[in-house]
Length: 81
Length: 223
Image 1 (cartoon, helix red, strand yellow):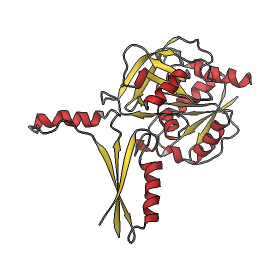
Image 2: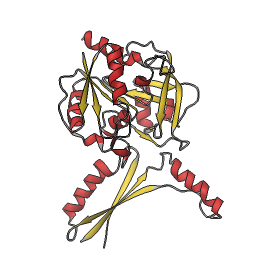
Image 3: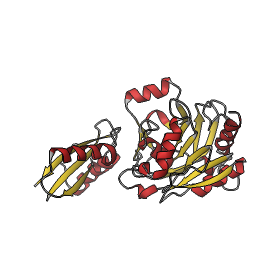
Image 4: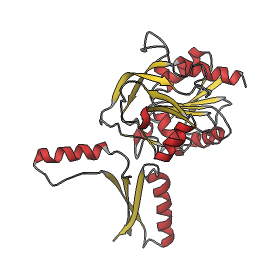
């Protein structure tokens, strides 16, 4: 069994008010390291066996059509052991 | 004139939309997400609400409901479709309209009587207005910030496809104060304000919204 991870992020040019709110909250807790924060989504998809190139291509397709909205988001597909 | 209103799991304003159609003089027809049957309606309204709990992204899962495959095919053949609030989000996710609706700039759910300007009165849903009309129609959403690429915005503006614009203060950070747009053909319209909530003086801030529903009836008669 393997885990395929899909990470979805808003494109840099799209305003991320949630990330901004997190960035504004950090200094209130004494964390002063952040110059900016952007918030995204992570999907962990369990699949049987070792993912083949074909299976990964299917996941890419699913990420493009359902898991992300290409108008405002980008995505990254990777396999975790 | 039979006008359909689709109920998705989590739709809220479907009954208000059906009522608005009836008060405008049409025959309201309830449609269900799990069926692909448009029941011989001549136009469709996708109502407001939180279909599928807004899971994943607003409208992202509704897009794949069986009824939407019929709506998408019909829309591509010129059938009038109006998406209100969550319906607008569904139309963007379905790629029937460009752009996307994202989290409001102030992060708050905004519920207010919103001043608007009519920018395009050539669609079947807005033909009863005059360009430049000032309306007051409620908005109520958490994810109403219209976002699109610079090229898409340029195309929408240069082709006159902005239907409604926020007047006064922009409530949510929408690009170019956009409150509603149409597709290239002009038959598919998405708006964030709720015209079905502004049809009677007893319950709404105005009756400015009723014209959306009378317009489509006149457009269908005139065809």
